[in-house]
Length: 214
Image 1 (spheres, rainbow, N blue to C red):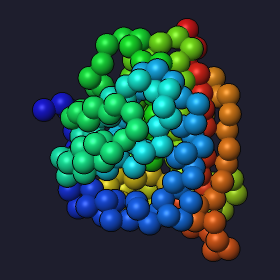
Image 2 (cartoon, rainbow, N blue to C red):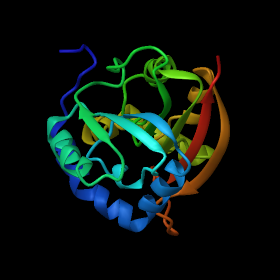
Image 3 (cartoon, rainbow, N blue to C red):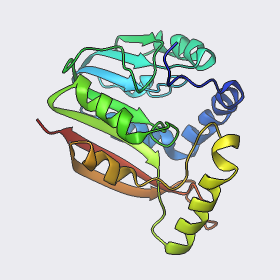
């Protein structure tokens, strides 16, 4: 078993229940926008229950969807059968992707970099499996802009939040981590989700497209 594999069966079942409601609340549209225009071969990291699959455009020739949790992977396998493009769902962890160097034209990660132990390790592995110039497309909830909310996020991340929410972190500067890992951000869209008057520690989000530098 890879050293990075951590079992979170309760959170997996929670995510499987709440993610369809998140999609209905606006995340499905974000997935559609994120994946638009993709072509060729794609590796999806932390595919979860496979909610991205329905949004891959026809120009994609193959998706290798990597998901370590067996419960979510079973649901992803079912969703793969309805995908408009060929999707292969496989076991694996983000820190040790089951792919050779420079084998994919694009990588997709949605709500993954907030939960991994080391963003640097995962982004370095994504950089490894992408061809030079290949794209990383991601959606994440991220660090807040205001100092007050950043302090609240740090407090949560140092106390109960990761343990309760499957290793999730509320206050990561994911855009900076992507740049530090050797990617150039080509498009970055910051948004709030859910988009309501009440601000939550997980409200700040970003959607980004970045290219792998040689």
